[in-house]
Image (tube, rainbow, N blue to C red; front, side, top):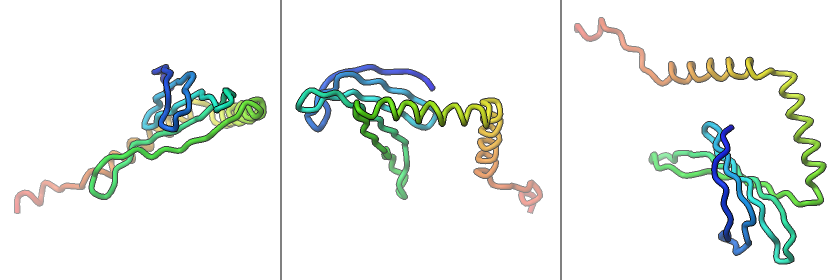
Length: 122
């Protein structure tokens, strides 16, 4: 994952954005936004954004958002750390990279039409 933008400001809901981190990771972008409630309590929103195309070929962004409040940080972090550790141990990064390369090659080969040069002579 690549680390990118940091910003502050006000969001569309009028809630104050205290801090923001943008992470671009392949076809997805993750936004980690620290916001303040009206009582000035901080909370975190995690947004996953993926570029999609509708039937007409027009692009749009599909977004999924999670709200995480201070009282849940420790339990969330414990759970996240645990599952990341499990995945890392169960499937080392090398294996995941080889699988991704194989899938990408399969996607590319499926996107081409099989052409026979014998058909061109007819």
